[in-house]
Length: 398
Image 1 (cartoon, one colour):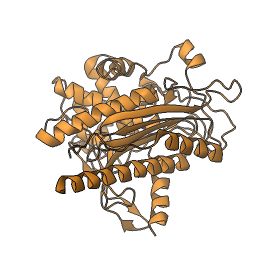
Image 2 (image 1 turned 135 degrees about the vertical axis):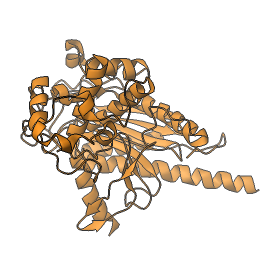
Image 3 (image 1 turned 60 degrees about the vertical axis):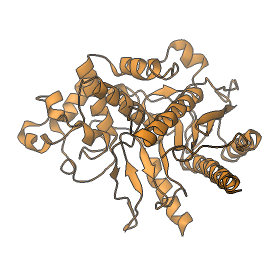
Image 4 (image 1 turned 180 degrees about the vertical axis):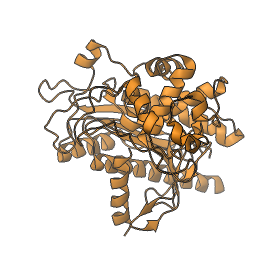
């Protein structure tokens, strides 16, 4: 029964795109050789061209490793600095930037969107937009559609040609809400495109500049960026392959102003480092309540997740990340995560603040089985952490 439910959940997620306990010096860690072997077996079974993985335990990076090739023709091996597009995991980065700007006093979660974008929304129905806030965009309670009508793409193909300011403003001038702001939760990529545009307007900086300043600069993630140089494209960027036919080359997405929801590039080393920083932030948050832009669940809403007419508890969305508790049929412990899928590139980013473990994965050909594989590795990390905790508790009683 649980496997059937889980299969449905993975299908849904592929479309969407506590203090760490003290441990003894003898704590066991997962075997890197075993993890790498599982990665290689998965890649061979599913014909995956490239996959990079990062493992976090006890709140620290245990290792990162890279498997496969940048391109099937040239067969240049990837490494931990190989660049992948991360898809919807761009949303947590956009959230971090937003919270940084809030800390600087440049905006508030309660700010009305129409005050930052005056005269943009359809005047005939402007009253419907008056209660729409920055928070509603971040937590997917805005009522905005997943995409406006002038965003078109054939499923499986890359999004190309960019998305200009004129196109975004044209969309907003005629856009219709699916429901009233804050009425319910519905995932919308366009939420984060609008949010990114607002961030650029209030700072007079491009989204690329904001990523460089508030992500790459502040958190020392030098390979996390929006625009690649020709050299990076030719020598460091993994070639994406379609997830429905892993022998067919596709392209990175050229997203323009849609980039804040899914167009950022990064490496396994950068994202593993970011997770390590988030772990440290959560330790402080859970101990003393100190927030930071890295605390993605300081505000969260139940999504009222429903499959097959049945409602499931324990699935919440915060400020750019998802939280699932043991009530939800995914993991046996509480896990925070987000992923990304661009019909080629795929990303998975999962961690447990309570147990201090996490996994990051990047691939040049994603899909549902890639998501499931990341979940399997996360389950192994959680089981190891829980077992260590029981051993330590037993030692304390002796």
